[in-house]
Image (cartoon, rainbow, N blue to C red; front, side, top):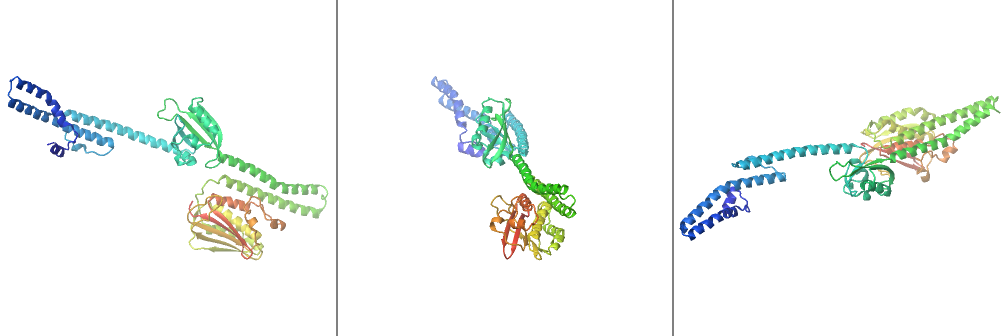
Length: 473
């Protein structure tokens, strides 16, 4: 019977329907037993009457039990987030329908509230993630409950749920946070240093959240990275120091010759012509030096900005060939260009790439042997050779090499070629003019483009500078 009811009406096995029928029938059974005992009713009549009452109770309780089971199943399905066909329920009792309607209304209300809360959460998260500075929320124990994208990028994706003393290795910062958490201070501001993941100078603002704020978060921490500003300050000081050092010599020469022209060589026409020629050369050198220093400073300031333009390397090489043709003719040097077929455009700052090619080609003309060739080659490579000091871009790249037939450069000097103001002693001895900044400028441009620069020098093939630039940034 029970199995049949379970299969037919989808009753639960532990529905306690039989127990309820028996429980409701117990008082009636006692009354019938008393009536039989005092002989006011025959046993057969008592059994028939009792059976009739049980059948009546079954007919009375069955619809209610059946519908309550459907309502229960419906509520459990909603609670688990699954779909349920409300139309498949067979409800006849008003109370059952009222319960279902109330559940539906409650479900619709909270579903709407959940959608609003989810949309607000997504919006708030997007706003926080768009902020350039790291922001973290912490609970009373100093555990990080939430962090925006900048914080996760700077301190690691697994920063959430960690305690601040496991993320920051600064005692001053930990003490400042502790003061705010203990309500000894409403807010704290400090500058501190961390060594991981890299050496950084940071400014922190720690502030208690207002008492009416909900949730476990009790304080918010805002971090401002001062490392870049510190680097800019160092670059500015280095620029002033280097400029002062390099300009001192030509200024002293110019001042000395002007003083001589004003005194002992005042009436010496030949000396005046020679001195004015030297003064002009030194002034041109200072002008070139200042221009290179300003160019280098500008490149270093934009070092972290990825280029987003397009550059046609083959066209840039031809532009450089044309621009330096007169200088090449003076030394009877032939500038040759070798192009591999189907060279793609690269994502780069075209003006800076042209400056690199021009600096390298100008050096090749200046230091190469007269009546020789300077060869500019461009070809495709599958990957950029790795650098020991920084991470290069991945993927396909374009290689540009500049070769001249000059004397071999020693390995010790090869390692120092891109140092600022470094010049080979033999070039100084030959009185070849130069500021020592061209290769340094080229290195920083290549660094900005996440490329690489290699140099080889042999006695039979001269010196070859090769720059590798990624096709895509």
